[in-house]
Length: 219
Image: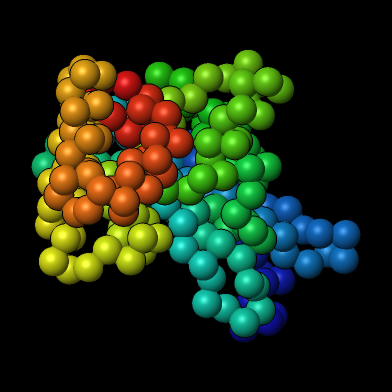
């Protein structure tokens, strides 16, 4: 397995030759060891605009390799019937805002208009990356957080019991679908009634730290 890393440049060069419209990037560190990788399907920007719903998902998973304790970032879109389409992936050493900046810039280099589509992710580093992209590159991203991941985070962070999970899901879904700020505020107050006032208040305070623009309809 260790020797297989030395084959990556040859493999990616061949892939690029066969798919000249794909975006391929490989970087080694100062010891000439594998550092990071980015690769897309061929003509991914055209495939996205022609087949996919106008939204992009970036999802991460930790590498299970003992030789590379990094993170794999999947670049995923959905076609009209809801099927997922993997447009590309990146392998990076850690999940950081700078590596997310690198990924977004490579997507842009491949022809994707990253400013015109919402990008869904549960990766907090993407929000920090968007500030860097705004300040250093003049790019304005529309970052959206997945409701399901927000719900799971709340359940885990506040140790929500199974008896209250259904009610929590219903209220957070109503908060997410709120068409106006008044509806959003009213649904936020419901958190204090469907669970208990003290815990519901803590959950509300936690969710209000996330700007509505990142996860609600009215935002």
